[in-house]
Amino acid sequence: MATIKIKQVISRIGCPKDQKRTLDALGLRKTGRVVEHEDNPAILGMIEKVKHLVSVEL
Image 1 (cartoon, helix red, strand yellow):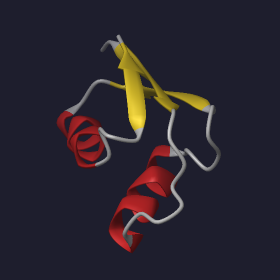
Image 2 (image 1 turned 90 degrees about the vertical axis):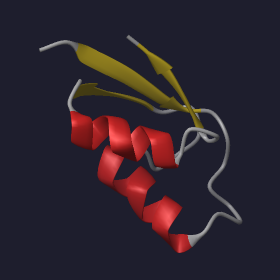
Image 3 (image 1 turned 90 degrees about the horizontal axis):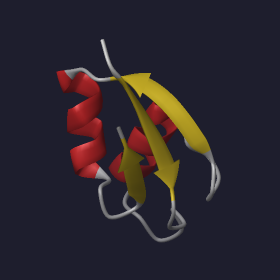
């Protein structure tokens, strides 16, 4: 499967608790951090939930 690079570009301060938990599940704890995940529906759903906080590269 293909991998996706996800970078947190905006701070999580002031975000709802469920969005903070989603960022934690993705492995993003600090602004500027980049993680790689496989391209699957679960990861894409998490990205959709926090799309205003992250940038995605294929």
